[in-house]
Amino acid sequence: MGLKQKLHTLKEKYKGTKMAPAFNALHTFLYLPNETTHGGTHIKVADDLKRTMNIVIMALVPCLIFGMFNAGYQHYAALDSTLRNAPLENFFTWDNFIMGCWTVLPLVIVSYGVGLLIEFIFAVIKGHEVEEGYLVTGMLVPLIVPVDIPLWMLAVAVAFGVVIGKEVFGGTGMNILNPALTIRAFLFFAYPTWMSGDKVWVHGAVERQKEILAGANVDAISGETILGSYAQNQEVVYSLWDMFWGFIPGSVGETSKLLIIVGAFILIFTKIGSWRIIFSTLVGALVMGLIFNGVVSAGWIGESSKFFGLMNVPFWQHLIIGSILFGAVYMATDPVTASQTNKGKWIYGFLIGFISILIRVFNPAYPEGVFLAILLMNVFAPTIDHYVIQGNIKRRAKRLKVKTA
Image (cartoon, rainbow, N blue to C red):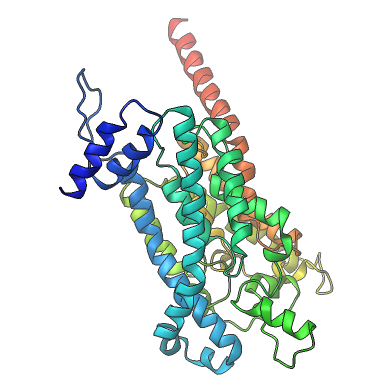
């Protein structure tokens, strides 16, 4: 008996029981559902929610693989700085990949294991089918956290994000906040020392610091990000090409701007991600960056100010440092929590980019604001759509009044 037949047998055996959603989820994940519509259908398309989620995952996989190489590269480069002299030669090596797999794959396993377990439990308790929404969230979460985040912290945060961020609102399609960003926000506010600073972005830096504090005679490993260096008015040791290709410390999946751009084209081509949101987010960031550059050029702020470093960053460089590009492509475009109207998408995206750079500059203790900006705009997205729709209604009513006058 083949696997498909065995799953079908189990599905029929538990049909009508509380365990039916669990077996249905496994069966439909591996094979197409064998149910057919008995009544009239309204829309016939080739895709479904699982296919949509799988496309997003495929757009994220290159960032994940690159993040594995980068985790190993940053670790070894912190021990031997000469490796940074030829990053292309020293990046794609088996040592880097093995180190990256050892550190990154556990994050993926914990993310999917805890998240899907909770999804299955809620499906069994409520008696509905297992929802596919966590397929993408489970991939996003490991990509937006530091490489050395303790696994138990990640598990607690995932449980919080799935239960409080999604299930209490009714599940997939009903949540008002992006679940992955809810998880990251929980980690930041509950365990801030593991989400910021110059030790959490490079594998082994935290443990090495503990050894130094315990009196061991070892060299410290620093993993200061570019944003952290700018925020402290320090010299940035990475070139623009390092920033673009992704040979820099940072969250697991947000360093390679090239691969994020490739993912953006995939999402836009398949019409899963809104190009309006992506483009307007980047425009909003550029406008805010231009304003800060203007403030510096006018001499309204001096080099002694703690805000000078990030204000003085050329406005276009804001797009290749930090996580704003990753957030614009994979987070802001979430179809559930983003604005639904076309005009609302322009407003929604622009405000995300604008507020992201605002937070980045004025909060040097946490010089990355894109995730907080997206969560804030998640809350206001329904309000934006409401006023856009009301504006359309008023304009149509006015035109109708003129025609009937």
